[in-house]
Length: 386
Image 1 (cartoon, rainbow, N blue to C red):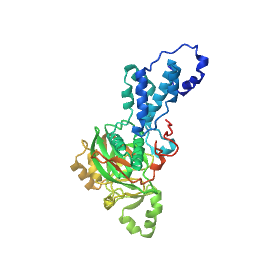
Image 2: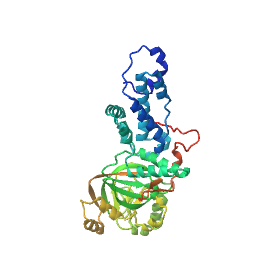
Image 3: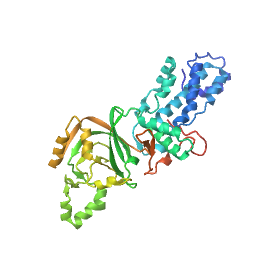
Image 4: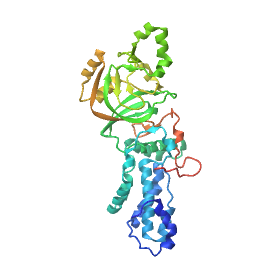
């Protein structure tokens, strides 16, 4: 069976091809009805309602092969929007989380759905499956009349489509505007920790990695920018104070010795990434009392960091064993039983845990990059680049 937009173009050549052998239809009348219903319902998921003109023209021609081709193209475009989103590349410019859903064979899945009469299920299973998305979808419907709130919720529904549908059986989700890290296990929220994120001038990036282990009593390899900004000057002006704070020259760079006053505190996660961004403890715990916590150079300072590490290391080390390691002041790495996926994300609307949704401050001013169907001048159909 022919698939794709090139095949739809053949509709306009139909008179010249009228004598061609007709193709047996795999799209029944009831399948077409289901497809049209899903197209019309797309705005309920804050997606644009796609044009059905090509399909209607094919139906008017009454040539089964053309109906199949047009229906395939429309169904696959709608499927990709539900699965991957409808935003332009510029909207995703700072979203550096790979989406494994792009590898899904939607063509084969659609064919099997038509053969088994499960087209409704095909589309339903392409939506983000996370409880957060369900909460946003419900709030989006309930916010009728509050266009600003609906637009914010819609943008965050779109962001959920940029994530893999399966995040793992156990994973950590950092939500930058919420200043929060959430641990999920078996689709249940297992713990929440406050975090401090990057200043607007040194923003924490959106990315994914895996947590491989925990370093207790870490050394701090001081970035060159911070050496230029403060540490280098302190070493020159007051070397005795610099030594008292643990600053040393080692291995061709400035470092800070382990200890409770270390800038990384008493814990740092092993989480390889190209941004040199880490979750870690901090001696400046008073900052967690602030409502807006954009104070770091990009790393993610974590409240109750030792408790957080102990939760990640359950089954590997007891809390008593961890406390003993911390008290030793010795630099010690403990590996997790298995790596845990970590997603550092940017959502400005999140579940409030009570069936509703909280709208958060857009601390890095990123919401405006995402065009939302029905909320921007120039029509209701966004660019579907997937």
